[in-house]
Structures are given as structure tokens and as C-alpha cells.
Amino acid sequence: MNVGDRVRLLTGTEEGIVTRLLDSELVEVAIDNDFTIPVLRREVVVVAQEEGKNFDRAAPDLGPGQAPGRNANASKKDKSKRPGQPAAAAPGRPAQPSLQEALAAAASSGAGIAKPAGIVPGTAGAKQPAAAKGLFLALVHQSPELLAVTLINNTEADVLYTYGEETSARPYRALAADKLGPKASTKPLSFLHLKDFETWPAVVFQLLPTRLNGDAAYELLTKRQAFKASTFYSSQKPAPVIGKEAYLFQLDEKAAAAIAPEKLAEEAPAPAPAAQAKPAGVDAAALKAQLSGDAPAKPAAVVAAAAPAPAAPVVAPPHEFDLHLEALRPDNKEDLSNTAILRLQLDAFEDALSRALATNMHEIVFIHGMGNGVLRKEIHRQLSRNKDIKFFEDARKEKFGFGATLVRLK
Image: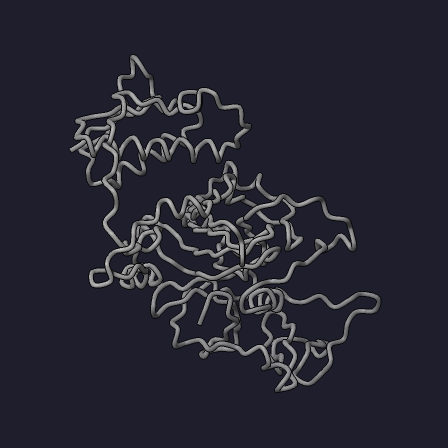
């Protein structure tokens, strides 16, 4: 049983879509009108796609109080469908699929990749604007309250990807891994409910572009996307490839850097003697832990073929480390988005903190400024989870106001 499967409750006649795997025994199912309930796995059964055709049954469009094949609470004039009876559409008006049928069609449309839809529903042949190139996270309405998490590849290359989620209760949980072709999108990787917006997990993608018979390897991109109400609702726009309105977030603001073959050859260690050689490969235990969801969002460790060269000495960062963009990139002339600037500042913060710990500094001050508080909150969140930190607090207010954080190291 997977996310997106259409299921029927064994203890009733209701049908719905699996929106989340809560644990090994419990799943979340979306019933009519966005109503989601937790259900034991043994209490639901997956509905096969061929069931309606094999049993010559159409999904009934039932009203309140109706059940398949009968309608005890309806009047005698009620024309609800019964198995084996054709649906009577209103004159001059095409029959509309029910919410349940729409959810089922979206979730069971394909086992791997959804085909591009060229036209936005309701625009009847309208020409679509030019779509931006890149990799996108798209949250697509399956119903007014239910959103499907989808990965869109609007490039010419294949992409190997992993998808996971972070919550306060669980640092990381891997949920999907596959290959996505060019100009394609995945089936729903998970579902999010708007009523639970404040408790949504942060989603984590690892992306590796690849081209068959290509002349370059690419670095792995890791993207963590959290959702804030201040920016989420303004992100709605037409999504490329699928041709639908979606809440859209670009995952590759900074494109994956190509690694030239000659650079790979330079960095490759010299082969060891046959008698002492240890074959290079993936650490099976680490890979198994990552795929089971019990490992952090990092690639599985690679077993080195030989001892690496001695690393350069670690240089201690300055006692007061400025995270403003002008300090990190004095000569910067790029027009970076707010998301790209935040990622750059967080990378600099993590690097400075690791160097401070490695060189046994007692304390360090990070100057992050006031702004809208996003950078400060993210820095404090990471510090609160680091076991090598004694404590942290706002630095000297008379000098920095609330624009700096003092970190005392163990």
C-alpha cells in the first residue's frame, strides 16, 4: 500500500485516497470533501483500477444519506445511479466527475510518471506562457483543501531524486526515491491538508541530474523547503509540464555544477595492490538505513578505495562573523532571490560554526541583522539541536540590538 492508492474501508462503503503512511500499522485516508481520518492498514483494501470495468460498475455519484445500489433517505423522484445503469447527464451540460473520482484519477493515473497536460483546465486551448527551466516542487490542489506534493522536471536531463520529510518529532524520514525523465512530473509523493498548515513538515529533496552517454558528472543538490504563510500563498502560479495552477517552488536556484572528467581523474586515488585492494562501493548498511527512513538527509557513505590525502588545516573564523550578503560576497553583482540569499547565509553560518568547534573556540558571535527574522529563527533552530552548544543568546544589545546571536561552545 502506497501514498495515492485508492482504498475502500472494510467496515463500511466509503472509499478514499491514502494521503500519508503514519507508521507500519496506520495510514491516513481522505474521504469525501477533504475529510481525513487515520485507519488501521488491516481495515482497508486497495481498489484495483480494473475493478469497475471487470464488474461492469461505474462509480456512483451519491448524495448525502445515499448508499451504493439503494437510497433509503431519498425521495421517489431521486435518480441516483445504481450499478449497471447509465448516468443521465443534464441536457446541454456535460457530466462532472465527483471529488472522489477526481482524487482517484489523480492518484491512480500512473505508477511512476504523470504525462504533461498542455492546457490549464478551464482555459480551453489557451496558449500557456513560457515555462521557466529547472526543477520545481509543486503543491497541486486535488480538492479545495487537499494538496498533492509533486516534483516537476522541466529540463532536458534525467534526474535521480529522493524525497523525505522533517518534523519536530522526527528529524528525517525518507518517503520516495526514483528517476524522473525530462519534461515530466512524478505522481503525488505525499498529500498535505490546508487545515494542518501550521504543522506541515519541511520537505527535503536530493537531486542528481544525469545524461546517458553524457560527457560530465554533476554534483548532488540537496534542498530543504519549509513553508511560511507569508510567502506560501503568493507562490501560486501556472506550473510547467503539468499545465495547472500550483504553489510552485524552484529547487535548483543554483544549478548543479558539472564535474569535468579530467577533474575526476585528478581526484581519483591511486589503485592499491591487488592483494590489499578493497573494492570501492556503497556502504550497504548506511544505504539500507537511509532508504528505511532512519537516516538523516545525507547521501550514503562511500567506502574509499584508499586512504584520502591529508586535509588542509582548519582556519578559525573571526570572533564576530558577519552574515550579511555584502560581507559574504563584497563583489557580488548577481540578482539573487531571497531564497538563494538565505541558503548562502545558512551555508556560511554552518561552515563558520563547524570551524569554530574544530578549533576549540569558546564563543562566537553571528551578526545576522534584524530584517524579517527568518535568518535569526533558522539559526536559533539549528543551534537548539546541536549538542556541542552550551547556550546561545542575543549578543550585546547596546552594540548589535537584536541583530546578533552569541553562541557559547562546549
